[in-house]
Image 1 (cartoon, chains in turn blue, brown):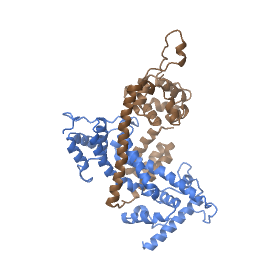
Image 2 (spheres, rainbow over the protein chains, first blue to last red; image 1 turned 135 degrees about the vertical axis):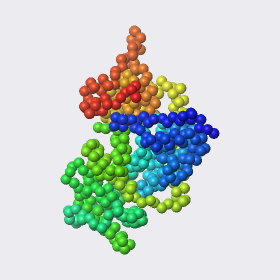
Image 3 (cartoon, chains in turn cyan, brown; image 1 turned 90 degrees about the horizontal axis):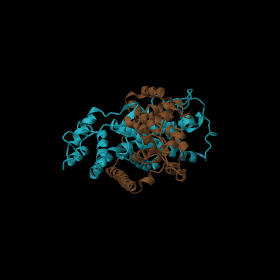
Image 4 (cartoon, rainbow over the protein chains, first blue to last red; image 1 turned 180 degrees about the vertical axis):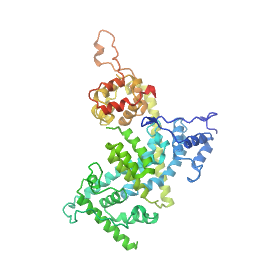
Length: 267
Length: 216
């Protein structure tokens, strides 16, 4: 069956959302690929979107798939919408799963479901151009959506951790010198090879309490300072609403556990 | 104060630039948007963390199970969106007037008030009330305002747009008058913004920089 909405010359609807006083625009290669794919009959279109490796030049870009889902939603082509969303899900599942590893294991299922819901609610909502950016640069838009979900789950995680810590008096058991934690110059998690990073995330971070885990990631991965003289700069201390001394204790404890783990592994 | 759609747009662009420009881009954006510095740092941190996270090894069964779960969620979303569209269309046919009566009920239902809606949309309570009574000339209202209201009230964009383009609401006392009721005059959106004493200069500048729907 020929794609019934296609005219002799395929018309690609322009984006309508304004940003910084200008209309958003797709990259030329995205527009060209939309026109090319829309020229196919429906079966060929589905097969084209579904196939291919993302390293191949003909791979249908996610920006294009977003356009197609919205386009076929507008004209009520339900079966095609379902096929396209299934393809999109297959592409995104791993990416979401990888990003939510930072969340406590007991919250990951919820986090995954919420991320999927957040992303697709917006893609299929044809009543607004709010998410036109997904057709301009999909992966930053996608990261932004997953971040919304992860941040919300961080809050739940922190709340759980706070409730747990009510049984301990964090401020009173401080015996740590109020100097900044000396960093191990050999320990740069960002530079680790993939395999070791995977082990660090899978094994070592699992040894830490929730507070230690977040503080460790904030310090070493996000690059945040424990405290800062600049009142405008976000710090770990401000984020937790705890004294720098308490944060350093958590960080110190996390580092000790990780050092022990590395000694045992002989790295 | 920026509205949430504007913040979201800034963050989308920031994350795209940050991917290639790193910390220099973070600094640029922090200088340009000092009111969003925490948000920018947090998103930059998360972006780094996402890159840091290694590929997770998944068994084929686990992957299939995640895909099925995701498909089920999306199927529900599509069904709800379809069902909503159908019921909205039906409702619009059957009781269009009732649906478009005013926004007050919906504002209360979602736990907001004229004041909080005003704050979240960078408008004064007075202007929100004017909109509620459809006393603003529809062609002069920017689409952004419909988007914001749709988002805050969890209603489709078209419902808000359709509501706003109806005739002005007549005062409830008009039925006692000897003569036929007159529709209240409608005001130009830009004029309301310009002369509103409760709006800050930044909020005025913000709304006046957005073209009305008729010019889009």
